[in-house]
Image (cartoon, rainbow, N blue to C red; front, side, top):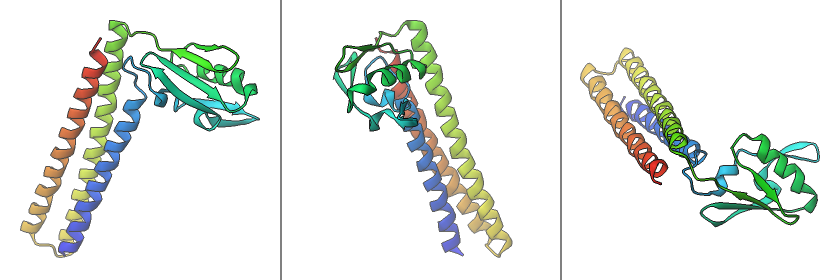
Length: 187
């Protein structure tokens, strides 16, 4: 029976780790006043009739902390890329100079920083919900094992291990969100 309990614990840990990875992905979309090529990861460009990720039609780079440059593989893609960036509602204003698209990252206002901080905390809460869901699934699996003959003390021990795992991952989420909040609020 301990193999089944170990499987439930490993499954819970894997699900919790995936929620941390998802948190990292979501936080890269929240800008903290510094340019980062991942800011444009959600932009899809109309490439000959198909919506294609920007990274597949252009090279995105950061010459400095306040600027992004987009170098398309084909010159004819300059206009569709500019349009896609504007339509993406990222609050960015691309400048087309005929060779590359230059995007100046505006400084964040105090109000915008607070909004981004709230957004980061909401993403953190979503990650915590996913972690708690993994805990519930693991506890349900352990309870099902009790019905199959798992001793009650082994069930309680497994539930304690699941809770400790949950506490560890929730603490990681809290520290990641605190670091992102500091990053956003730093002028």
